[in-house]
Image (tube, rainbow, N blue to C red; front, side, top):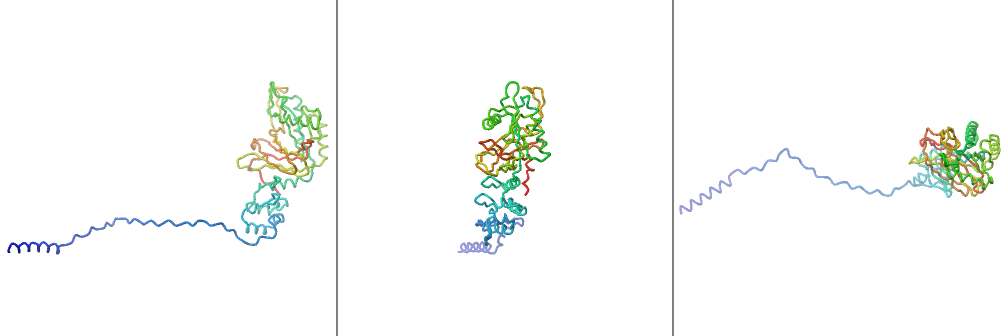
Length: 374
């Protein structure tokens, strides 16, 4: 009995100590702990809906008529109500509002249109940009002209005097502001042996033979001068040359011709040549010419001579046209401020070889090829 009571006392003592003792405190939280922020969900971006242009009444007057009239308020209303690219809308003939404003000499309207995104190089169905319309309009006075073609060769001893004469004609035309354009085609039938002409081309020889076949039976030689495809003479015969030019300048042009340098993003040298007037089965032709060329000849009939030459054709291209039309031509040559380059454009009848109209433009650095003025 005593032993049993002793065990109960021990149990009671142990339990009492457990209940009455101090509890172990919880571990303290460090004050240096950093709270990790909960990431916010990314905002949902709404997909853009269809663009809604301002709506309103469409003017009764067309945008083309308004541009021709110089009515800026009506044009502004058109491009506000319509889509933004409506400023370049074209009619059945491919004419944009800028074509009409240029054609009518509306300077303020043209500036407004270009400031609002009008395409300066937009072409109508005749291949004409707005600036070409201005140039053709200015040239449509049927002013007389003379295209002087010289067929020559560095290997021909009779040709240097003819080269000097065409250079003289060119300077005279510039001084008197006459529409006289000189081009010197170097033929290739003198090439071979001790000298090859650096500017010769079989195409130029074929052109001379076409004149022989269609205009001047049995006559092809160097130096041969042909004026407007109608008159031919020995290239260094001053009296005959000026006589042919004077006769040509007494006849009005049958076709208005414009030629304008075109800016290209890749730096390519290009021109847009246009023709306006009555013509059938014709071609619009362009010749890239260079002035101020000086070459030492070491073979042929001119061996040992240094030749000074102008109007040298570096490239010749053409495009057949059924009537009034325009065409863009590209050249391998690059604008160079140290070189005197020009492009001569003319329209020629394929059947008769007569020249119907001509014009020219100097080649400028691309950043200098400014839009034509109204």
